[in-house]
Image (cartoon, rainbow, N blue to C red; front, side, top):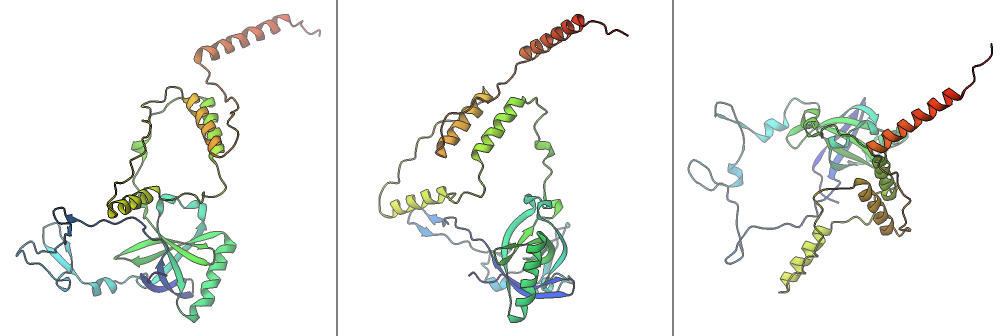
Length: 301
């Protein structure tokens, strides 16, 4: 398991649970170094003072906040650790809410909360089982990595997982990105739903993996052996514009079914009605209604 990144306690009501916070995810990206192309030697990032040009040691570097007037105020690690916050060494649970009430855009990194010592075992299990039975998640606050954060606690298997969350003012308003109002035919919507149904699964498919990283690792391995990397696969240029949306949806459903090993034949989807056809149908309906009204005999009193 990875090293703890934070330690403290979960606090809700009068219950306190000593815990250690461990990363729940890892970055598997391929890392590169900056090198001198002439001899492939690595390049160092030097920390140099802008005033005297002196290269600094780590113990000569601290934190400073630049004020609007240009002056800088030094803030020490001790001052940050001693801030008068109840969340400095505790994950303070503020509320329990249904998980569906949380917008996924608010959720960020994930961490496991491990019970810290024998005394933490029972309250840790108590919180986990209570969350499971209630089908809710806990919303909490904690001071973490130099700032106070909002967090979500949920149960995964037999562990409690903490997700840091973004504050409401950290979410950008998407209203300016919304497309202009446009007419949508019912047949097009039904076609899109048919495609979604064909591509739907009960769980996230396990075959999803990082193809870019695999290709990059193969390229690195080939170059390390003095070989030429594999030639890229020629891909068909995407069309600039969808001319017939219904045809594109129909073809997409057929392709999705073929990929899943299902019969490729697609039931004909509702065709898009033109304004002319709709007007003609309305006119014919009016004429039929008028004929029926004329043919009716008056009822006797």
